[in-house]
Length: 381
Ligand code: GLU
Image (cartoon, rainbow, N blue to C red; front, side):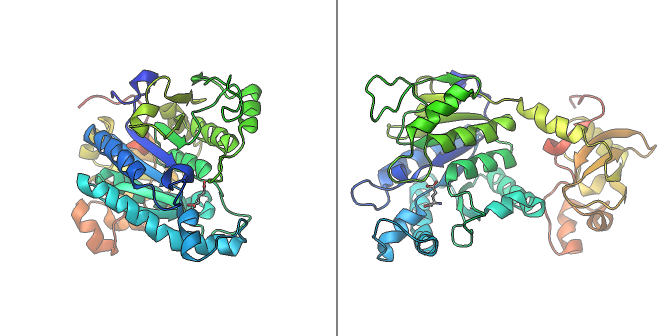
């Protein structure tokens, strides 16, 4: 894929985080629509290259404050939450407007720390986001500040964006703000500061530089949270680009060498996930596949309900199960998308009959191809 070729990153799914200092106009504190339009143009170009895009947008608190007359400098947590609620509607309307000329649907998703840390809601959020990007929509995510409590909140969207990147197995996380990237010193105070373009490892020196850069004026995330975000993303095999959004094509420019700092992941994406699935020592359950499904799965496709003969074990959605052929030979392991009772009810059904049986449909796959590790390598077919 051409995008981020300057960094030789093969990108299929990207999470783009935009800080309040870009989303809001520095003078008027209203939405910075030229910036939103610039991002929507770049994102539409990426969608046209079949690259799925998720936006994590800050700005709700900043937009809500003047609407509620909360103009004093410090805000209590409750005031912040109220401001976020009043500003989020304006924020998402801005994104709607920005994407309208491109005919791209925008979908709002507000997440809390708990949603991401609790397995069940994590799985639900992941399926919803996957479904949205699969439909060509652009999810616009923010922290659900209204219900987040002081102890259990991200507080900054850098780490939220990194957790989202991890959740949806993105290959690239782009953090855009008003700073050019990781520099040898704080560029706002030191004219000799130079950009560190390529960071292959987050060393204590890099951490120290990040600590020195401090937070920008409007958002809550400084360089330290960006490095923390890069660490989270990197542990899932996702590359992070930290760049300034104050350029013509903010998203595209970040993907060029010299457009910012590129932080390499600490592990390879596919391998970390696959190792996690393959390393599940004791799969909690077992699915038996008919010969058609075995063939499909062996050629890299997802497991659909129609190819299921039986299910055993007390597994829940999100557990690792083994996939067997009818002779009892294990062909792989995977993360199952339904609970065992649900699987028993939908086994053998065509995908479009699943909803009639269950009253809902979680997705077309019982085990998604990205959540599957074969006992032997996939054969093209
Ligand atoms: N969720 C906050 C907002 O939308 C932003 C947090 C941050 O600046 O990172 O205003």
